[in-house]
Amino acid sequence: MNYEYILTRTDGRVGIVQFNRPKALNALSPALMSEVIAALEAFERDAAVGAIVITGNERAFAAGADIKEMAQASVVDMLHNPFIDYWDRLRRISKPVIAAVSGFAFGGGCELAMACDMIVASETAVFGQPEINLGVMPGAGGTQRLTRAVGKALAMEMVLNDRRLSAAEAEQYGLVNRVVPVELYLEEAVKLAQQIAARAPVAVRLAKEAINAVYEMPLQAGLAHERRLFYMLFATADQKEGMDAFVNKRAANWQGK
Ligand code: DAK
Image (cartoon, rainbow, N blue to C red):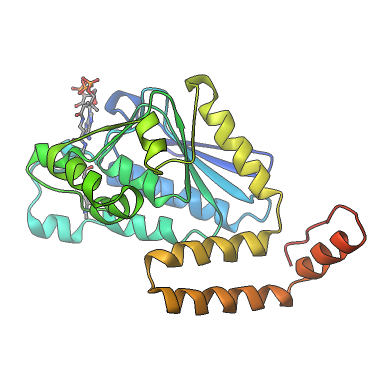
């Protein structure tokens, strides 16, 4: 498939989606986002892909939604804008999605990274929700996911007063999984994705679902949900294979079944 605003490729069992609007610091226009979702859904359908990495370039992961496209929008324009649906579709991707972030991850860019399952950051990454400077506020999860990730005190400062987080701070506050030198951030994200893609696919999928349910459910419901998913795995060939491999001291050969 030919895309205008993104590049895609695979590396082993990892699908890679790269934003490709460098002159606009990868501003997330609806056109770009629709291509991102098309690419993610294609990787979702491809059994040869076990995990996905989303990235930008060294200078910018993404500097937010496209302000120039939104500047003159009315409330009805925004209401009908398909933009937010793309976030919901990203959330429904069942394979692990890792954001490889370097440079600016602002506004919708920060929200998109947070909507992924993990974040690998370069030392030069900066995370922020600067919408307040535009007379608006985050609208794609920034007040919700950020607060859950870093806590109320810091989220308030970031959203109300444009406090930006360096990569080191983001790691300290638990927003990112790890920080690596800029020349390694994509390689490191792909390596992490390769490792996960080599694991039992159904268990990975259900485990991801269970962790993400933390954001949707109270504890009792989450625990019950987790238990059902755990029981379900005993219907898979991979559960028999994994436990037999352990008992017989050999490496498991996952089928994804
Ligand atoms: N949109 C459009 N163009 C952008 C952009 C953006 N978000 N960010 C940067 N650019 C463009 C600049 O306009 C400039 O273009 P030219 O002037 O060269 O044509 C080019 O990228 C380079 O930017 P700068 O010249 O500004 O580069 P600097 O290094 O000086 O500064 C910067 C980098 C990242 C600090 C600065 O560009 C900046 O502050 N950018 C804006 C960051 C921002 O405010 N982001 C939040 C955007 S609002 C929705 C839900 C959520 C959202 C939308 C809808 N719904 C529920 C429907 C999300 C909203 C947002 O994300």
